Length: 209
Image (tube, rainbow, N blue to C red; front, side, top):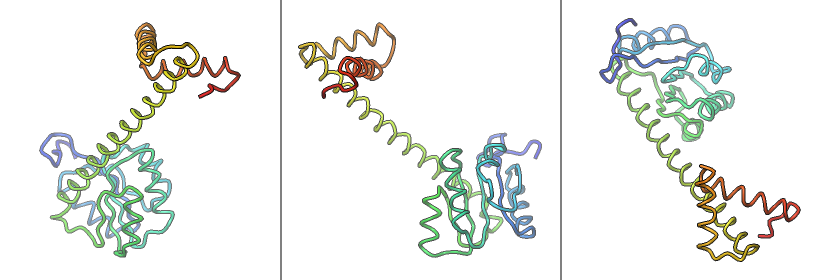
């Protein structure tokens, strides 16, 4: 694919990992991918050890064409989503609600209950990539919120310890930790964690709060 253009118009072609155990069907989809401007990094006969292949090949998109996905298939996809998240397009003969739900829970970005017509390859992959990016953004936002709440709990606990054991007011406790954080050039939450650990040691493993 020398000189192949990225499907969005840039010069870098998206790399696709194709998983399909039917050689004839896989060859048709492979041709459609190449014609649409994608780079095929590998074609695998099954989802076995999928996460290891993704780690090694670093594809931008994974396409899985499997007639009847089983538990192992969903577990392999879920493993990728946990450790090497990628947009996953799944093609299957199964169109029941349970199969679709399991696929989505496993990290599938686009699920089709039939083969992809060649002319639909590009828009389907583009939609999968867009959905994946949106989901990742939401996950990052959710994680940031969780981290902020966890940091706030640490800071509040450390303030409570200083107020209880050093007779500080809430403002005095906060400013004391803030000053220490600046001196150590660390996050306030990290300083709060250190304060809690010190009181835990002084109290024999219990902060008393």
